[in-house]
Length: 357
Image (tube, rainbow, N blue to C red; front, side, top):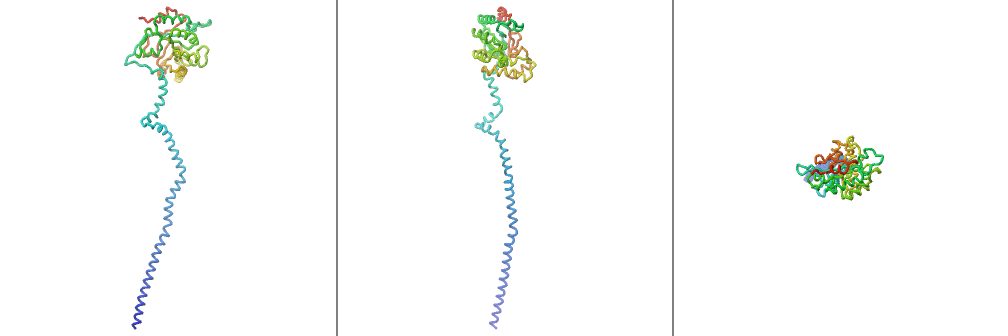
């Protein structure tokens, strides 16, 4: 009995141990199943979701990268294109803005014409002078041909008569000046010499070079010649050539504008005025080395639009065919002259140029 009771006691303990172990094993298996079963079901979608979330933007951006990159690369191009001027000028940040502004681009045209001669003289203070200076007006310096009409004859002064007139000026203390000196005197920038006179020639005829130029040089006088540039360009045989004009300008004669084709400027459009006035001015400048600043109205015909264009183009003044000796700043685009005719005798000439002292 004692031995059998001990066996039963041991068997009960062993049974309880086995059941416990079995229970613990089942719990372990269940725990492992839960541990490994859940990840196995949920990890794949989770990874795909996470991966898709990263891949799609990357794929999308990779797929659309060329257009985006291309667009991004072209967008700066317009932005970068203006930058080089700025960058070039950014060497000095302050000057960069000034260099890029349009005004320096326009400065050369303004500077070029005004470089030689100097800008328009303006009166000192409020007042300007009105001076009495005879401006002589010549056309042909030659004998009129036998078949000349009354106009050709009237516009002619023979070389002998012209030389006698220049001799009279030299003998009586006259000093020929140019229109630049007249402008500076009117505005108080320069004093006039005793008995000043301006000698002008219209149209640029061939006899100006053949007859007038040598006589002027003989007396050391300066003359002002108004050139019709279109006639010279066309090689008109009755007019001077560019080499002749250049030679005279180099010798100190003044060459000024008389339009390109000698039209009636009252009938010209704005574009026509620019072509006739600015065109002849720039053509002359290319041949004589300075920008001419005076104009002679073709046939003496002009209107308010003509004067406005001369002012716009920075001319200093203009001469007419009307008679008179008094000249001021306010009427600088209508300076009067004294017409020399075929019938102008030396006594008449002397009376015309008399200073009335």
